[in-house]
Length: 261
Image (cartoon, rainbow, N blue to C red; front, top):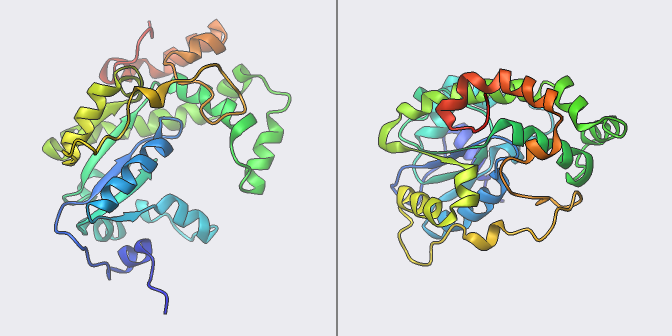
C-alpha cells in the first residue's frame, strides 16, 4: 500500500517526524523568488532529515477543495504543531498564533515590481496549467501592462497580504525577513542570513550565489525574464506609477521600498 503523502498526514494528524527540530515555513508572495527559493531550500532540508510539504501544489492536484486549510485555525494548528517539516512557498499570510513553534522565513518584494513581473509571466512565460490560466492569457492579448496594473485587483491583493505579514515581525527569534532586493543585489549577505537562521551552517549548504542572479538580456519568454529591482520604473507609465505609489505608500518605509514619494 502506498504511504500517505506528507500533506495528507499533516492534515489528519498522523504525521510523525524523523527529527525533533522545529518546522520551517517559507512565506512569500507570487513573483518574489518564491519558486526559486522553494527549490533551493527543499533539498537542503530533506538532506537534514526534514519532510517536505508543498500545500499549494497539493491543493492544485485536488482540484477545487471545499475549503482552504490555511484559513481554518484548527487545521493550521495541527499542521504547524508538527516538527521536522519544511513547508515550500506559502503565498498567503496565516494568523501567527496558529503557527506553533514553526520558524518563518518571510520573503517580500516591492509590489510595483511584482505586478510588473506578473504581467509578463502571465502573458508570455507562465505554464498554461489550466483553462483559467489560458483564459487569463487570452485576456491580455490586447491589454497593455498599464491597463493590467490599474484594472486588476492584483496590487490590492498583494498589499492586503503584506499588511497581514507585518504581524510576523513580532515572532522574535523564530522569524527572518528577507527582501528580494537584498537577495539579488547582495546575495552573499542574504545567503549568510538565511543559512544562519535555518541552521544550515555547512560550507556546502549554500542556498544561492551571485551566479543565480545573472541574466544576459531580457527575454519575455523566459521565467527569469530579468531580475533587477526597479523594473516597474522601466515598464510602467508615470501616471500608473503615481497611482501605485499612492496605494503602497503606507507600507513603504516599513518594508523599505524606494522612490515612493
